[in-house]
Amino acid sequence: MSVQQFAVFGHPIRHSLSPRIHQAFAAQFDIALDYQTIDATTEEFPAAVQRFFADGGRGANVTLPHKAAAFALATEHTPAARRAGTANVLTPLPDGRLAAHNTDGIGMLRDMTVRQGIDLRDRHVLLLGAGGAARGVAWNLLDAGIATLVIANRSPDAANALTAALDDPARVGTCRWEALADAGPPDLIVNATSAGVLGGSLQLPPTLLRDGASCYDLSYGAAANSFLAWARNAGARRTADGLGMLLETAADAFELWHGRLPDTGPVYRMLRPSS
Ligand code: NDP
Image 1: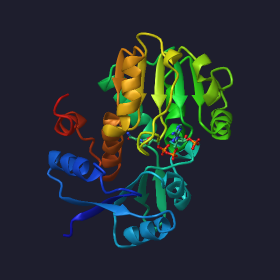
Image 2: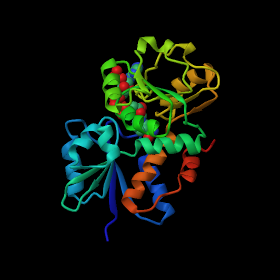
Image 3: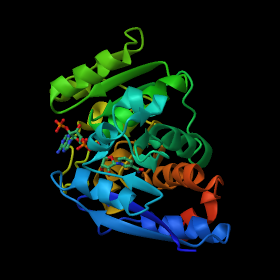
């Protein structure tokens, strides 16, 4: 029997940890699988996905910048994918069509609350960014019982659109990027911008944070350094990057494809031996 084929699509994608993560999960259950990275530009993405599944692909992860395109390629959408309008996992349906899933929000929550010990109930949260990742996590923050959510994005239109989609005016509002100094002080800042990945920094006002707050960056590794260093200097008590989120979202994709939920703990320690 041939080995099952899986892949992650993105652009760029060469440095993705997903192949190592999925092979480590598979080893927990003695499953043999092939997991590739497929670099596809925006123009190439739809045909590359169709080809992968036509050739027998059993499942795909999708990352920057293709999450909205992945959603559009699918004909069935889970509720989490539908409300976000983006997908990070694609699975084939028996008739050749595709189903879209979004495990970003639930994966972030599990990492934040279980691994990082951040209590979200009744908290005031500032969400930086209003792109695909912010859309993937915003509803889950509200589901977790936060008190308020303020969304700030460099381009205000995207923040306004996400706020309107969330449709919870009692808890959700926006703040102009230039007025961030007046936004707080939040209990938790979630950085869902791609500034770190793109090699930029956020230029946040030093007075934004109060002592003892938590800061969480969806980016991980070097891409999170700038924001998390700012957070520590500004007095954050807890800081975390998005490596744990990546693992939790991968675990949910693995369960969708193989029917088994892997233990993310040993894989987290493998990827971050200092933890
Ligand atoms: P998008 O391209 O969809 O959105 C990017 C967002 O970042 C936009 O809101 C954009 O604002 C903002 N932004 C970019 N540069 C700057 C800057 N210099 N200053 C202020 N804002 C900026 O990307 P995604 O939402 O898909 O991804 C965002 C990040 O989340 C990435 O780093 C990605 O790696 C990470 N991520 C991590 C996951 C994990 O599992 N750990 C899962 C998903 C995402 P504007 O609208 O004004 O351009």
